Image 1: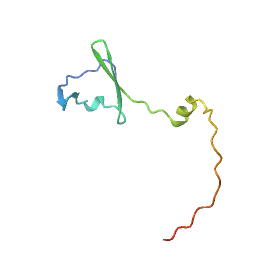
Image 2: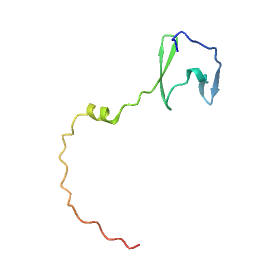
Image 3: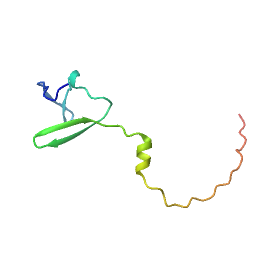
Image 4: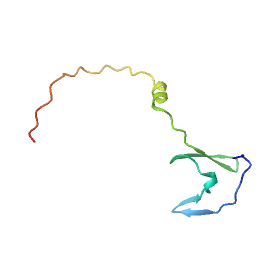
Length: 79
């Protein structure tokens, strides 16, 4: 869809929040979005999912010594 597409919509109240119904042709994928203000304009963008692998590569390794844990057999359970 070209970026020049537009449509007149109405604003309404949802509790204490101002809301807008997004017309079908402007629907965003997913369940979440990011909203920001640029001057008098509001920009709504879909929240891009970050693959877990990419997220993990952003983290630095922990400099932590973890205690040794005994590898004990599981305790029997009466059913």
